[in-house]
Length: 406
Image 1 (cartoon, rainbow, N blue to C red):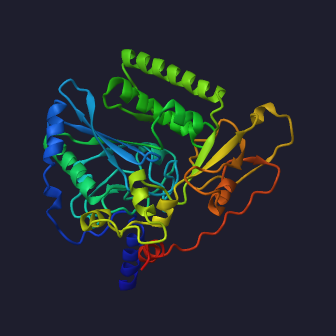
Image 2: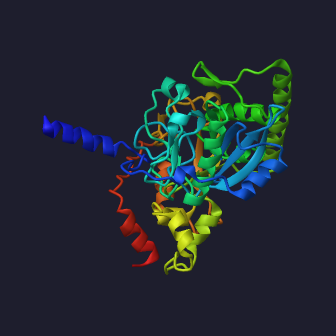
Image 3: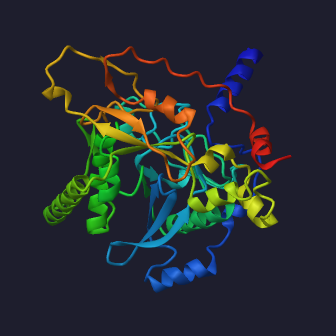
């Protein structure tokens, strides 16, 4: 029996993802909102007790905090850089896939963790009703301090302290939960045109419906799950304005495609972070990247997970679009292997082949990018290629030594 308890305890630790150790207590969760941020609230006509809403963008590695005014509309308060997120662009599908979730989530007071070993944290509430409807699994997906991620959104300790305080005061003012919108990138015509051949494009366009409603009305969109999709009911006037915006965006996307904007896919070694943090990691290449940082900044970053992946940046892969399979009369082809973390509801509108284009952020295509290309949903007459076996990752300490020196 004792052995069984020990095994269960060990399993719980493995599945804890970004949860962290909660065996100690601190008062950091009581830190006041900085005076400069309070002054910013006053300038925008909102108070610390007013409701909030947050929006996250993986590609840009940013988290926005919005405040609701007396008119019921939200105004952007501040944008905070994320120092780390893991995985690829796309939704989280299963426990252990290192994917940070995408979708609409509700954060309650019970989700706030004042005693996280990752400085401070709050749980996003993954899986939500949409995720569960698709059989997705995972737990303890959080926004937290310390620049380490296994499926979470990580900020510096200083940033999470401020964000945590803003949320704490909103809850104290009576807000029962705040909405956290998570996107692969900003839902612009340019981004959607570039990623039009991605396997997740149908899912992302569904997320854009909620994003458009918020941007038009500046009010928190309500959502439900209908037919395996997010549904965003709206009053007639808002629905008309949203439809008009979507029509404009679609025309803009079509214009970009007509002008030669290539279809691309971004392949990350393991997630990314804001450009400002990448610059820190890549500074003084071949030497200690943290050598020039002051103690306060170094402590705020904490134990950076996979710094070599953060420093590398994404590989840009050009996707050569092909004719729709429906328009081709030919023997039924064999399908390639689906990419890890792919959504069951987010198949591409067209099948495609891929070629590697040199990214402006890297010196050339990597073996990893080539391996990722095998995962793309490609129609081919060849046998599927077996996925490469991943080796056990080194410890954070060993990886940091390897990049920054001993």
